[in-house]
Length: 225
Image (cartoon, rainbow, N blue to C red; front, side, top):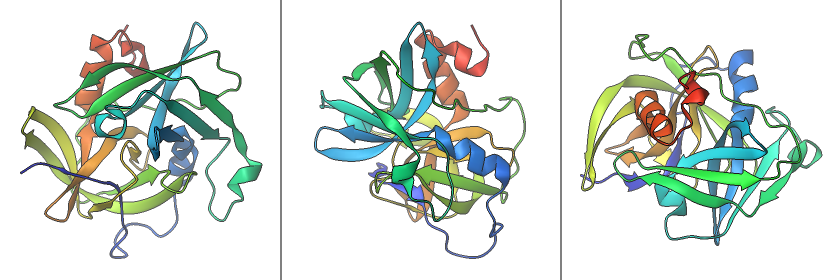
């Protein structure tokens, strides 16, 4: 069954910790608000090289659009007036690569005018057992917000376009949060929010993200030149 387009996990029970770990809060600032055409969503800042800033988002958020704007924030904090910590906006973004199987899209913006945090990435061979707390970040309101859920496993998810590995989470997602990061308790970025099926959330797995970036000469994000 096709993944219903949606994004960010909702906290249903109190199983995950109520307090957001400092590592998670710090890493949440990689999530930026993406304005795509008339719609909005989330994109992740990957890093900057040669005055080019690279962002990753979900393909279904940007496919068919040709106007992109990114707004980034200095930090993530609860109960914060985000207008006071907005670093600024980038316009003129270009879609340079995409992959339908994994629902990934790569955007580039030139002439970066302010520093943006970059992801802390995991060692891809590490084993993450199910039923561990994870945190999902998204910008459906124009600024980052964060929710806790539980990881329930790694799944080979099939779509009409093909198949790709995803993380599955206990809680589903809601519209407007696609393209946001899934973060573990170490503050590592392990997945990109994709959608929901049968009440479960699905996030494109880090191994798929790494393969996509290596293919497009951005393997340095995961330490693979």
